[in-house]
Amino acid sequence: MKRTYLYVLISTILFSSMEISLKLAGSAFNGIQLNFLRFLVGGLFLLPFAISALKKQHIHLTGRDLLLFMLTGLSCVLISMTFYQLAVEVDQASTVAVLFSCNPIFALIFSYLILRERLSRTNLIAVAVSLIGLLIIVNPAHLTNPLGLALSITSAVTFGLYSIISRWGSMRRKFNGLTMTSLTFLAGSAELAILMGLSHVPSIAAGLSSVPALKTFAAVPFIQGIAWQNILLLAYICIGVTAGGFGFYFLAMETSDVSTASLVFFIKPALAPIMAMFMLHEKIITPTIIGIVVIVLGSVIMFLGNRFAEQDASMQYKGIFAKLLRKPGTPTELQQKLAAERQELEHKKALKKNLSK
Image 1 (spheres, rainbow, N blue to C red):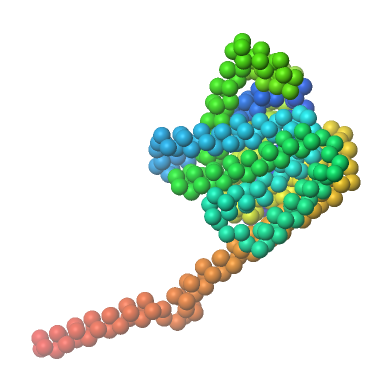
Image 2: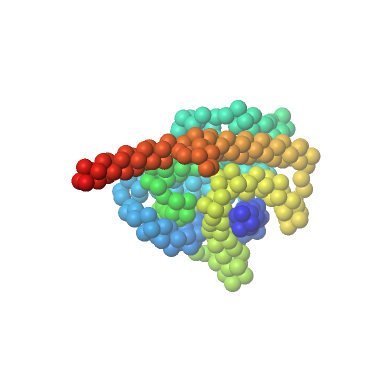
């Protein structure tokens, strides 16, 4: 269990530093380029683990699997993480971190709409509390950065959708977390690379450049800007934050349970703003602090609800076996049946022996 909490701690620190590292690298790279590089390198870094898992499970990829990864890559890398990267560029890292951490709440809603999973009363309360915290931070009456808020919330919503699509696909094909993540990253990077290539077509590049808000999408570079001065930061983003963050998260899930691993996203809303305050000197206003506290409260409610649900399910599971096994030291129904058949067999042998005499 100590190893599990170590995985959770490492993953939490890596994920909490995500917005900060992307903010620091933003001056050296195009945002779309940085998104492409981190998921390409991160996917390749996790690929050996994915191949090993596929071999152990004796799973051969099919055309439908490739379509699944194209869909998860589209929703995760191409849509959600592109909006996320743009949000980091136009808003405070602390605000983006808190708003993006609401993605499990949106995943709950999509699980109800798509997978028809029942929402418990605790989960409904957690959703309501977290949405209140979201509204406190957004403060619709006094919007200071509507673009950043819109991009952050869109990223969180689409990442919640990706989580459900990914879970649906892994349940059908029995892919483990690392396999799903690695192949999703690579598929999304390939899709993003196609769009980046199209952005270099002269007519498309000219059209995008003519609109100030779309200039960042015109002639997106692939490797331009990579230098010795930023190679360590880029490596940290690609291998540490992207591959390592997800890798340790799934290791925590595999050595414990989903609710314990999800502590990562419950601690991040509180830790990320503190890290941004010290490393980027970002100021956290009072409404944001109140909103963070409310969202963390909603996360705690959801965590405790999931924990109690798992314990209840475990008790019911054990209860079924308790009925079958009875109390230790007393014969079970199966043992009684075997004993009766043994007695009957011995009785038949005795009769046969008597007759032979």
